[in-house]
Amino acid sequence: MKKMSIRKAYGEALADYGAENPDVVVVVADVSSSVQTGFFAERFPERFFNVGITEQAMVDFAVGLALGGMIPFANTFAVLFLRAAEQIRTCVAYAETNVKLVGSYSGLSNFKDGPTHHAECDVAVMRAMPNMTVVEAADAVEARKMVPAVAEHEGPVYLRISRSDVPVLFEESYEVKIGRGVILRDGGDVALIASGVMVSRCLEAAEKLTNEGIDAYVVDMSTIKPLDVDLVWKLAEETGALVTAEDHSIIGGLGSAVAEALGEKKPANLERIGVRDTFTETSLNYEELLDHYGMSVEDIVKAARRAVERKRK
Amino acid sequence: MTYHPEQLVKELDETAQSLRIDVLEMIHRRKAGHPGGSLSAAEIITALIFHHLKIDPNRPDWEERDRFILSKGHACSFLYAALARRGFFPREELQTWGHIGSRLQGHPDRLKTPGVDMTTGMEGHGVAVGAGLCLAARIKNLSYDVYVLVGDGECQCGVLWEGAMIASKYRLSELTVIVDHNHVQLDGPVHEILPLDSLADKWRAFNFATFEIDGNNMREVLDALDMAKEIRNNPTAIIAHTTKGRGVSLMENKSAWHGRPPNDEEFARAVSELKRRLSKQ
Image (cartoon, rainbow over all chains, first blue to last red; front, top):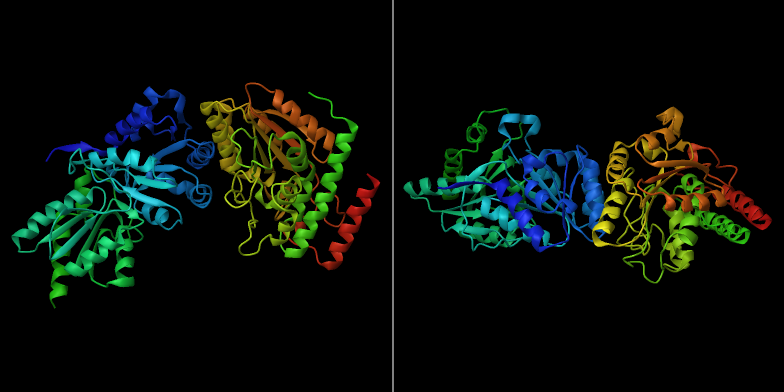
């Protein structure tokens, strides 16, 4: 399957949307070339602000721009937003300012810079903040479609963008609906619910499961908060066996969100694929790193098998 | 710079003094609040709300209004009292401060209180937020100015200086930062907790046009705000030397009064002292 860069698609879309919407401004903390905001900077220099390595002030500065009626996209590495957690909590989430935080290089996708640069708990922090919407793009098309969707969604949003190139899953006609999961593959025995780069791995896993006679749903849960609980409950009722998959800790992210939804209404067999409460290591290759930390296609297959077996007991 | 007539200065001084009484009543009634840093900022906030700022109580969301960010949000009792007196909401509402359901939170909330431009209370944010507001005005061709009142303890926050660098980079002459330099923070004297010397040199080093005034002298405050408006190409920092707990002898220069309410006896003494001074003005 053809692979495309998620971050480049985001950067290009930001520039395209900037032409459509004069209220969009872009703020970045000295990582413009990495997070691909250069396309916007070239076309709209008067609406582009590189504020250096000041993540805390960058967030506050974006808050000020939002108070003045702009729609700021504040960009840095996902892990670096943790440095500004209090700014985000007080001045963005609590003050309900219309700030869009774009956490790039999410999860382990910055494999070569190592664990200092990995973001394994950003979703957990963002998701716990009242008023915060948390979304993640699964491929280049979804990343592109996310830009207008996020900009036009009133209020604080955290958008998670991977550094990696991933298979293109969506047609151009696809439209992102914030708050809705998308069923990419119908099933019946088990539901694989994923976000970000793990969605394509789940599709691969579903193919393998077919050979074992296990029919798997695959869902792109691109909105992690507010979670599409109706869809989760429907899948739980129908399959009784669910697997979540995310390039993030199993604590606090999509896996937790699904577990919370199930536990409160429709308990079902659940397996969580993700970083298992550990810091990670440096690698020469992203795919190998995901495999090494229990997020391989085979790991998803095994987890699905376990969930289905438990159901049948 | 316009000359401020004697009568104007006198009236504003009286307003500041009577708002000090409102503030003590509010803090005493609620049995919570921050008297020290509210009293030190009395002349500054009064000068802004009752004279200098281009604001309209009937249009708190007016796009062209000047913005005021009380970055030292713990002084909110004074801001609330001033906004009520200026007509942004009924004065009786001050009695609801801190009650569940009130529009007046423990620290300022932009979504709840008319006239509050930004939610504050966690130190350090105001300068960078103010910088963003200034740039939004430039993009949208609006002509408002932005005023940020910070504490001196707050100048220990790294994010404040990050914000100062951003304001400097974009030469935001629309931005005026006023430092309520009362020399006392929660745990004790600023020079003991974490020295700031020399504060004015620090702001100058960040390319702010910087001047120092007596921040409890109404005429000096009014003049400084006018001077800030005349600065071109740079943001301004006004280092306003003040006295923590100003106007109430038992509270002056004491860190213990950063965040504690007066008991009945202390309250009575404080108010009678303020009333005595007011009658002499």
